[in-house]
Image 1 (cartoon, rainbow over the protein chains, first blue to last red):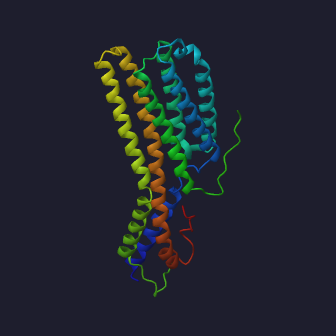
Image 2: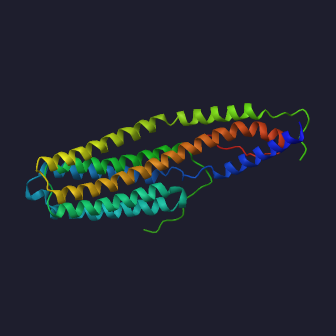
Image 3: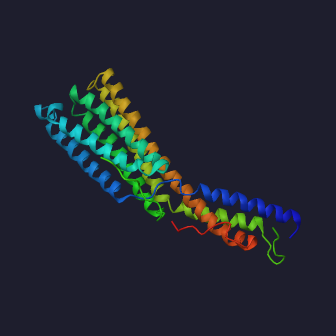
Length: 156
Length: 120
């Protein structure tokens, strides 16, 4: 091998070694987080089904569903804490959960003024999409599970 | 560092092998690409439905703006998840390329400069 060839080899090796350090920028799969997201999606589906059935009646009013908003915010907060325990590797999940919570806040504001039958399926699609993608992301992490990474303790 | 004379690194061949390995790794994420496309189509439909509600007079302009605000938050959230999926695909591609490169580079450096990575 010529001197130039050796230099290229060394340079390539250094670049590859540096790239290796950049690998695994995403947190590992967390079964509890996946389960929590699935439960949140079920709760979301039940909520919109109830709204659809009670549209136009007093049972569709915000007052009858105020607890759901509180419980949902609390559930998102727990999941966020769990995701954040992995640090920067879970930034996409944490940010998506933050945006989901903001969406819930906006939904509640809209709901206090009353929801029409036509709005309910549209809103259901929006929240279902957010949760489906979060679930998809968590499921995709199953392929990248570095055994040495463990989450920090989460204080409720 | 002195490379043994009998070890010759074909950079072009190595590059091709790395690209091929990365390509195969990304191809394994094709299902996720389909999921993302489906989700973005659903969201486009939701926006069209909101416009239809406004046109039909079922909601007023102010209400439509509130709906669009939730829509924007939704798209941002979905795109964060897509970002995570993209990073996973990039990690897979990098890990696959590194495995191929490690075989050749480690032989020349005579130590594990590129460590073995877990198979995703």
